[in-house]
Length: 462
Image (cartoon, rainbow, N blue to C red; front, side):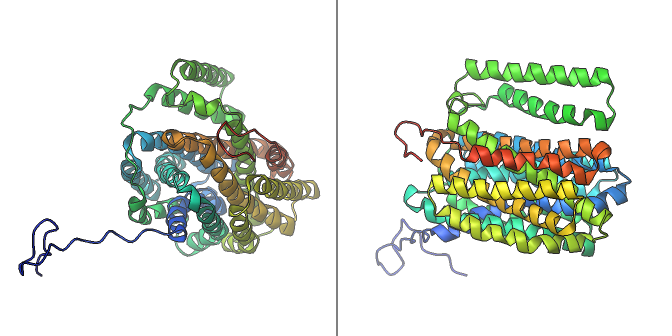
């Protein structure tokens, strides 16, 4: 095969040098599909894994409370990984952050596939989720950097892609658990690795090369981990003295983080980001939505399998039609203004909470359980579209990776709190009654979604 002529040298015939054409620009739809394929498999770590929990519990001889950590640990590490790699994307550039995260994600998948017991499996899920957080952070940073002129079209298509991942996750989880293994189901987030090469062309913005605030990151991770441990302390059978130590660690790490933010305006938690009221409202909405979804995905598959005798494949198939509604709603939300999108989100969260509450009160009938959980999946997709579009406008370019990472850290830790609360209450209340408490998460999100926050000066209002 002959070598192509150099761009700088004349050809052998004496003609002017051949200049390679620039690659064709990536259109809005292609951009949305690439970024959705990068972020989307992270959904499998919760929804697909939730379907597989009955099989995990049976295979590893674990109780409902212990197996809840398959979701809780994933939520914790996914949130922390998103925040850390979001900051690294600002410092190193998205390309380098995605490359490093790919190695972490692959390593976690290997540990999960070979784990001999629940402890090792949870450790593998922590590593897997941290790598998945890099994919999430990279996708969000690239999405926030989309040209404002094309942002509405990209968000509309992106919402549809995310909703399709959410809708198909339960069925894919059921199929892989039934026909392959629950272990394969738990490593489905590794599918993001297939999208990394397709997204590198979008990662053109160089990093700032600023050093990462390691102390701030450690304080944030410690506070989040100790919060989830404290919630689960009674179920884990931790002695009172150990629980008191965890509580002290939570207080000290939280206080240290506040001090760090005040001392370093440009630290791991940028002062300008957490000083924005809109950031906190968006974070609280996401906590409610994700908390409800994670808790429902913990409780509902176990109720359907244990009480109604459903197989994991039947659970996955039943959740597919209702969750597919999210694809339509999310695509619609991508083309709406912020105010209308918030109202659509509030409506979906209200209906979700209402159905879950009625399911818990009436004893957990199969139809309302499936409907409520399906709507929780649709509300998740709406949250990604509405709040990502909103915060993309509010965050300055140098802080988009950090800001979106911290926002999603709040989302995923909220999800971890939801599954941890459900797991902690299940032994005393029963899985069905737990749904009454779970319903409070999306109902609170609905109220907050209607909260109006003034946009920062110079940005379009809502």
